Length: 224
Image 1 (cartoon, one colour):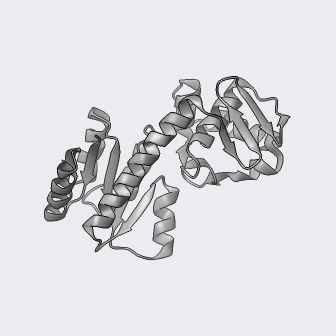
Image 2: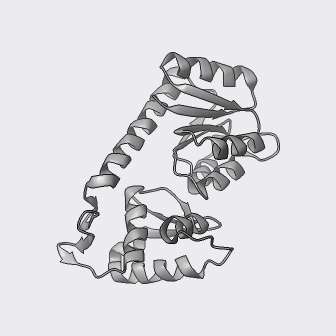
């Protein structure tokens, strides 16, 4: 089963979620503020994070953005905010799902199961299978990319960037994370390396390249 980190300052709700998740066999860690959550993620990365929007100190959006700089685990945000603009903002900084308070425990558990199933699927497909998005196909085994069966000539780094984006469609990646993951380097705030590769990748992909969108203040994502 999974290690799940619950980041929620309402202790009764945090404890209720913990009890329900533990009853399903999961291991649960708890944090009641943003700073503690970030330390917990670095000390032992969980398989999934349940993250409240309004937290003392660092709020949920800040925590989500900082986690996304170096980690891929799914994040489900909890919030009393219901407006569409807030949901979009949460998703654009890297959240995978969004649950508005008050919510039913059965719905929360169902969403957790769905996110964990997606993690398992991503791991399976990303490791051995062909990735596809419409006419775009990427084969990690033989290191080939094609659009409508027409092969594309990508550099190894362009291939790696595209493979990461295709393995996680809809997820926003920070520039720092892309540079560290693909090049194994610290970006030191210099965005030109990844920006230039994204620009060339978009050009080579043609119309499909428009699916690689800029998430302002974060980085890039591939729209599903």
